[in-house]
Length: 145
Image (cartoon, rainbow, N blue to C red; front, side):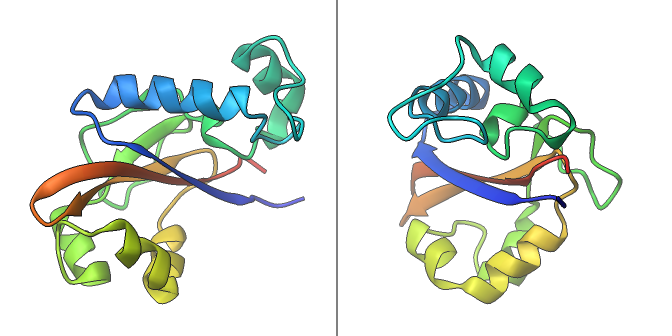
């Protein structure tokens, strides 16, 4: 099948681990994962959905179980972890270390470049801003296979 890209936005909160947990639950309840349904989940739990997806993964944020505060620095990322992009990388891609949602959505070249640095079964996250105020968190990743 090959790794499939996925992404999602979630409201900002300073507790990134809590943001990840809540986003996983929201995406699960909406059925937005490989094996989910149009009107909600087809599994009883996130764990069941992940087990059913097997080696392919859920092709969603459900595959991400941890959040790192340390960028992967180009090393082989660990599976199931979301890593931040460095300020330097954000500036290279978006011209600022505080990109907005509009910057992410409108700059396809930067988005494609960003995806090249994501390993299978892992993800990146970017805190998005409106001026100087954080507003959202953008998660993007690849399925396992």
